[in-house]
Length: 206
Image (cartoon, rainbow, N blue to C red; front, side):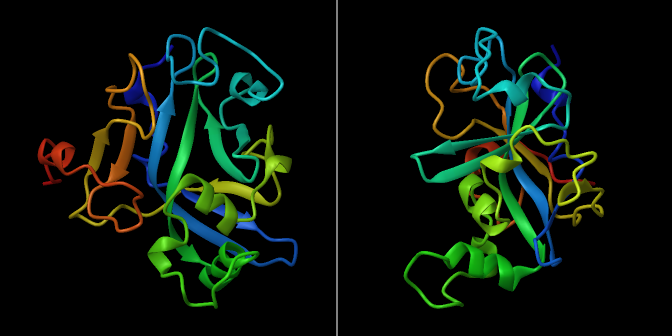
């Protein structure tokens, strides 16, 4: 099994692309992720090698989407990675294209007029980015390498003032609560939760 250091979805600044039914294309740079290593990782849905109907995508080829529902309402999107039952949770995106459509999708079904969500608030959380990109359970087990309406593109280099921060995951308890398995870009406003203590231990790029 690969270590947490090999889960580089955030490190390479990939851009997640979503093509809506009407043809509009939405883009967001991945700025925050969490790695789930499967097997020994007690916080993973695949802990102990457990395979279920729900988590089947975690055991498929790297690059497969694992989309699950929380609270019976919201969705979270993961990408399976190398390692038995391993996956990377997408926590936050920096919106790049299609922001007004993202805003409408976020505001659909809730009170508030367009404009009540700032740009940096559109995708700053795992469920928020799914809402903004209209991603639901139908995307579960889909291959990012071949899917016609959702895929990854190589992004441009991050601004020089940003550095990758490695810190603990959100909402994780137990033996793995303190593992540095959450990664985000320092200084990016779209990150959901900033860890100032962890940032002090990160050196800015030269």
